[in-house]
Image (cartoon, rainbow, N blue to C red; front, side, top):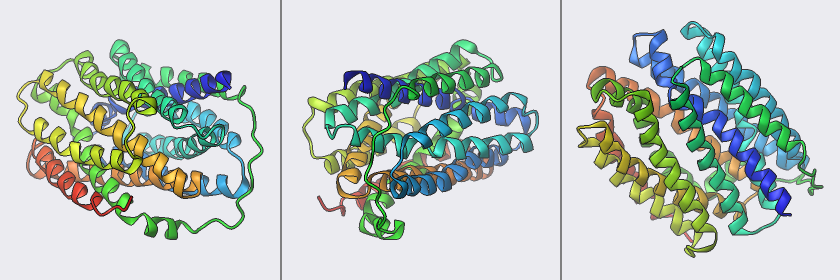
Length: 364
């Protein structure tokens, strides 16, 4: 069992490291291919648009067919190919195409690997530990991007990380899972959890609108170097990794309460960013982001899997985040184009306050 846990942690780690090494600097790459900040937002959104449909489709198909590993492995191989193809994307059209392909590939992995983890041993500490390697993967990916200091080279490194995750997944046992023929419709699951998904959507729209312009604010407004941008993001992922592990066996709070705490604390994050006047002031704000994400992600996913079809509900969770990842960058592009980048921070504060009020309506 310990060997399986390590394989799950390793696969999760390399998958998220492969995504994160590209994600942080994607706005900078997109801007190098177009001078229009609105197009930058649309390019970022294309990845998540594809991920929405992929997570919903493959999450439900995984529950219906009673299989997990095949989608995990196909997803990792497809990610290795699509993220590697970013290297030859030399104009905005090709970049959008490979972002769409990468979104489809990554969308099939997350809901299935979460369901596989849950079914291999319904232990909160184990699930929290595996999920914490999401954050550790993001941390290492961000650091690797800063060390590479090259927007093109990171795509080849990303492809290698996915291939390493694929090699680890090849050693994971293929569980026989009861085929769920009569699964609740996606619509019913969403309606029953409407306040949950709405508060998640609103919070993440605010967050992703900020993530779209934050690297540009740090580099262009405050003069941060690429490695300094990495330091800012490491504060997020490092804090998240530590707290997620503590939530497995040290922090005994109800899952849905954890989720609400994460939503509420997000207001403070963006309020702090709205008043920063130097790149290093983003560090404590991003550390608080790590706390908010640990609470809402661990609490939210376990709450869903305990009360709904596992892969389908986590697929909806992932798709809700992806919907926000489509809307947020577009809003950021519009606000940045018509007003200024810092105006995005004020928007995030307002919409996160609304998200918290909605989350209070979720029943325990």
